[in-house]
Length: 225
Ligand code: DX5
Ligand code: ZN
Image (cartoon, rainbow, N blue to C red; front, side):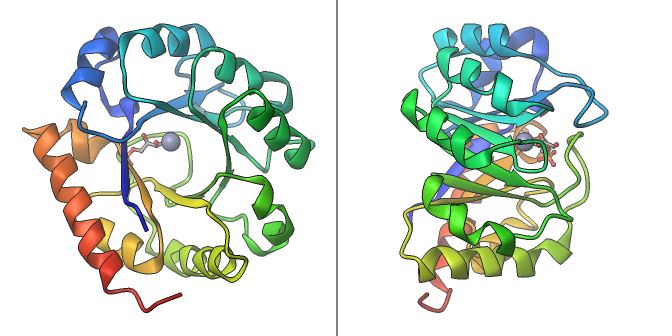
């Protein structure tokens, strides 16, 4: 199981996005949080900024859309240059159609679950996805405390993925840090979003390396799936 680290630019200096992307160039992906002030009570950036960022960095962009009506808006993020586009299932009218459209445009398709959204009803949809995001905080803001009570959901999601033999990345986002990354990896996550832990560190590159190492060693301790 590969380990991927995706620093969240939400915790970076928005006036210097290209330089901030450069500070974390050792990362596998760059996590871009798109918020519309409707799905979540916060507003960040949209497709024009993603397009500019895609031109400014070689790191692939992992766009997390915390927006209403993703069926309508998500494909524009593929056009803007995102390598992966994640929509929230709570907001999607037709998640299968949307995932197929994202893949058809050439991006990886991700689907996110808020903390109160269970994974089981979506078992049959999983083969349509490249990534499942289990939120480990209520979406909307960086710097929140990791919700330990999401660990059983991560485990259940990992079981479903393994049972179906899927090549589907399992992402965690919210409160992921040196203190919590091992618990996530032990539960079966393989892609780790970290905002304040990485951009708040004195040495973001060293923090990325340390998160990757901790996750990899915790993943090695998992019982075989
Ligand atoms: C929260 C966002 C996260 C956020 C994580 O709604 O989806 O990506 O940036 O920030 P930290 O890592 O500080 O919890
Ligand atoms: Zn996010």
